[in-house]
Image 1 (cartoon, rainbow, N blue to C red):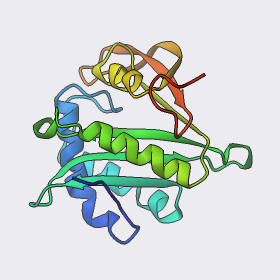
Image 2: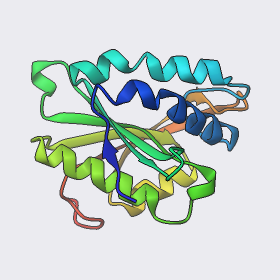
Image 3: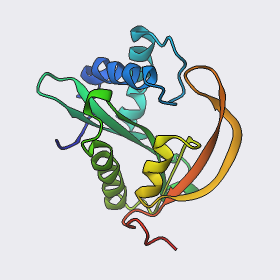
Image 4: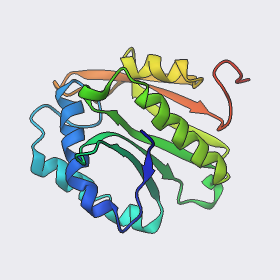
Length: 179
């Protein structure tokens, strides 16, 4: 399974499969900015609102789909719109469907985004994730460096305020090689 970068022409047709993935991850407790009870219409609308950013190149979205077109995983890179930030990008919305976990898909998606960033000349990647979550352990194992923690940053899907930890990585660094 290789991630595919969605072109602006391909992206609109993927908003429904991406919405289904988003709903699956939120229902499983994934802290992605949404609360329990996220409806399919809300999830589709959220992804459709990303269309202008995909079209303008402000974000890039990769997906892995199965033979039925179901979205098994996705990752987004968001690029800075400011001249002094052209060297950095943010990793956003790394998601793996509950039925596809444990197969290394998250690592493949993250490596794809890191490689694409490096090819684009990005020298610094940043992200945030819920503190003490499986995602945090995943990023640490992938060589991301912890910057710090912000208490009560965002509510998890159940509505409980949780801390968020900020991370960075220089594309091309392997786990354990950061300064």
